[in-house]
Length: 410
Image (tube, rainbow, N blue to C red):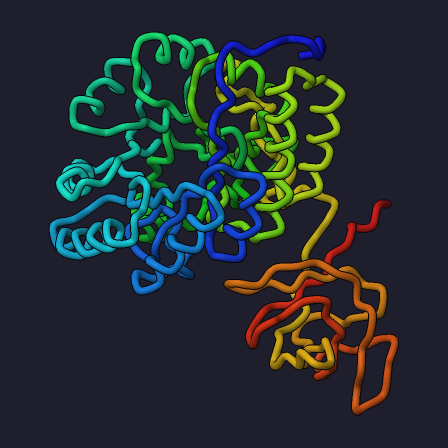
């Protein structure tokens, strides 16, 4: 990658971003090629509840207006009592003009194909060889999202064996279980990961005991917490495998995360396209990604089975030095004044603080430039107060206000 004059023989893959609402999708229009999303049912992200079946047509129309492809995930385990509702979801997808349905359950695959929908096989199917990809092609699927447990040389071999479109993950959360087929949450809490309701017990603090009951001394306490995947430094190698699409996980991420991550990958892919991508640029982009929510970074299985470097022993969640803290909620918006009434529920606010205002269709960042209390300008507002906040763009009732800043270093 250090040679900036290397010319790539394979086309630049499509950049596919996971989004949870229209605010996130709107930010992607200049950086991504496609978005994948889910409704409030039959999704492995059960907490992604913002896009309802009644919203689907408007959502798809708006996103297509941005010039983006739309891929809808219907990738949970499907039980007999679910079949009618699955049919309703797929009918809605067809009416809305969704470009493809992401699925792995044969019932969903067949029902989608019967309705003339394109089907992308979910990574949940754990497709790990060319014959498996060809099997789904014979069913009528057009693309396979390959297993996350494959190495680069294996992916290259599959691409050489089949003409099927192949998609791989390049960034986002990793799971301890093969292709996310985990039963730990269901066993411990009755919350099925395979139905989208994972409680993430792999992110908990665990204690290890030997066969005599003695506690084993360890250097860390998060024994099962996998680091996030980050392949920003290795995109040329992945392009050379011949895959057609790169996917970034993010259906539960906020719009700011989505924007930052996709800008980095868009910039990297544009540099790969013109042959100018260097090690130095890759390191700079990775540094920017480290400022967003992450659990530490690894290259997953691409260069071999992960060892200790693939686990985040020291932390269960965010390793970024930049933290978002919930501050309050928007009560009203006054466009003529360029101001919002905000109730501070969790944090104080001071003029000069960096904030994010976010909602289903709202997202922007700004500094706190003015605060007003009882008609008087103030320099700081305390938690529990209702204040006027100067805003640079339109906000909506119930939008959330977050304070953003770096953690102190000691």
